[in-house]
Length: 423
Image 1 (tube, rainbow, N blue to C red):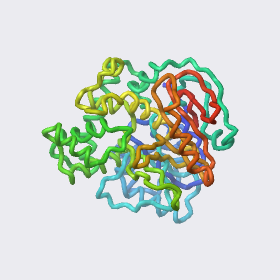
Image 2: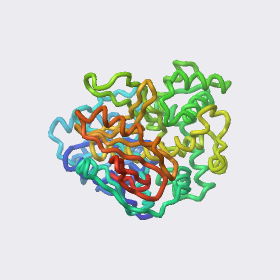
Image 3: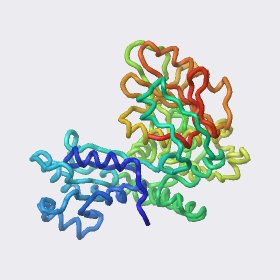
Image 4: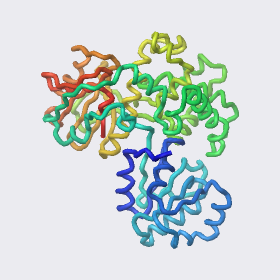
């Protein structure tokens, strides 16, 4: 199958020019190995026992192999990680080693590599990589042009296509399969994590259904700032196999280590710029397709606005939160590529900005609405926030929606179809 160029490829090239070794992390199946194979001249698959043992017996073979050298599934060999770390200290040449793989076992005796082996994160396909349209609203241009940024386009992307993209997922080995095959692969992915990955990485679980109960409840809370205690309480109230608090915390740590759940931190400015800012993180899964699969929701249920009643009061907003999750998936990619920080904002009185992408004193604000049209109510928090920070920050206000027309409002808000978002 021909290689599909990824946005992160350019950054991989930059890392190869800048560092002797680096580590590419990300959830299983996001395409780490395939992308690195495009750059590597030599590859070692360390989950192959004979390959691993041979290289551990004679690690100096790395000194003569053609670089860049890909050490795939590095977590199987902490010895080689430590060998390369010492080689970096001894002057290893830039562009020599690429590590890829999963998180190390929790009891693995390795040095972190901090200051020596930088980490780069790969995520599922962003909207730009899904190529729904060739017309773009670029974050890099927003940072460059700030108030002069303007985007006036019309695209031929229907609202239903975003729902299709959510079900297809952003995983390269899954999204192009037929519907039945996609469903099976997503289900197998979840089951393999429960029965294999947890144990392999040093997280023994006696009751896989207990993990699943907590994970499902977390999936029902995506794109919210629901407290972890509430998630646990809900899991315990609706599932016989729900875990205890301590056990639930270990599950959360494991799923974060596997890059399956992600927490967007609250935006907390320095000093006393604002009062009453909520500090709770906003919850997301690595891909909204997993939320749908974990909760057992069909496309028909979403189209007919009939998510399961087990979601409680939040079921009426679930389509919007899936759409926000799809947008988050892209903004997280673009933020990384722009070397910017991604956060959210919420006050204790209910004012909120879905996402803030910050670089220096420039703030890109994003309010996300799944509707095809917008109204004045949708924009009020963007304008309010600008009045609060305009003396300290330059602000670009964006409203992302499922409509087809990009334009700039008289109050300076850029209204942008989600499919146009780009790095």
